[in-house]
Amino acid sequence: MRDQAETLRMKILESQGALGRSIAVVSGKGGVGKSNFITNFAINLANRGKKVVIVDMDIGMANIHILIGQPAQYNLKDYLEGKVTFTDILYSGPYNIHYISGGSALASVVEWSNEMFEALIAGFEMLQKNFDFILFDMGAGASNWSLDLLKSIDEIIVISTSEPTSITDAYSMMKYIHLKDRDKRFYLLCNRVYTNEEGQETLIRLKNTMRKFLSKDVYILGALPEDQAVRKAVIEQVPFTISYPKANVSKSLIEIVSRFVDQQINEEYAPVPSNTFLSKLRRIFSKGRD
Image (cartoon, rainbow, N blue to C red):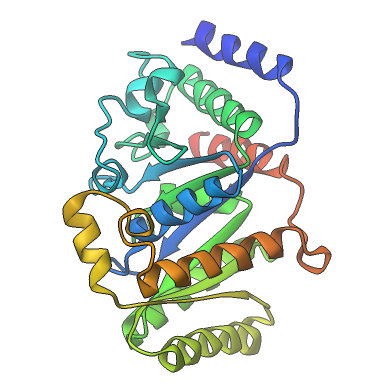
């Protein structure tokens, strides 16, 4: 394991370029379409010339490989246990995206050896050096390990629906993360809306609540409509922006990607330095294992 980690570090030293951004996609509850969003979001970032990798951290419910119709034989846990190399778990998927299945790797961080932890850092370092965006598909709700990981990730995309319970859970998630890291950047997305007004009302409500009670500004990405094209695409195992590019949900998704990319280069909302991700990860997880 140590040799593998050191080999990865040597590759990193030989590589050039800026560090990629780490972005988590979260929701307060399940069933909001998080994995569907992140898959199509990644594809459209790739269409803009960005190098994108998805790390599927939804333990027990990982399904990115199902949505793109390509199974993952190995996962992050296999790598941390020394069964395979990091490149064995980094799959080159269709549509110019890459992905990693997390498996149950982070469910028992306290049981990790030092070699496993160093291997994790080395693997994520390689991702930062080779990709513009590392997208973490987090499980719904919160657990100790996922909250620790979220505290280290650069930016958070929060997905809600217009249902009151979903709105409340989304706010609770943002509140917890904000109280741990007041500089964390949040993007809001409302999914499965029946009208544009419904989506905007939900987003503005969440934005105003964050500002009123936490004095925190968040950025609105937009809303995605309820669309039968999504269900059809899941059955076909082809992302909806690929199989149904003219569907309303696909058009809305492309607009959201444009809005996100624009904000990434907007000086008024410039992201924090990317090197904070691994330094925070090392500090937070080391503390949790002391």
